[in-house]
Length: 69
Image 1 (cartoon, helix red, strand yellow):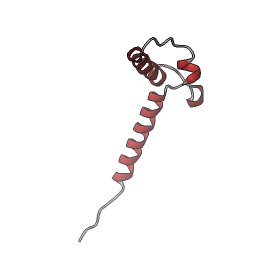
Image 2 (cartoon, helix red, strand yellow; image 1 turned 120 degrees about the vertical axis):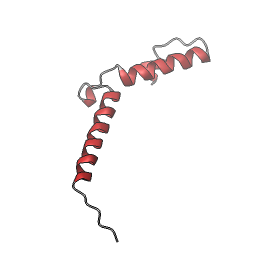
Image 3 (cartoon, rainbow, N blue to C red; image 1 turned 60 degrees about the horizontal axis):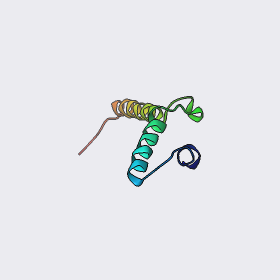
């Protein structure tokens, strides 16, 4: 945060700071590719994991039978 936002942005007032911070977070999560996650953005990685989890859950549920009294 300090190195990539506060050190680079000129923030004249709190409202402008909030707006710029929101823009920074959006760009960081949705546009900036990250080397630590194979060049994906955090949003792409989150969606990839979510989809994988949903597919895994659905395939596991198909093989389960419920026996009740």
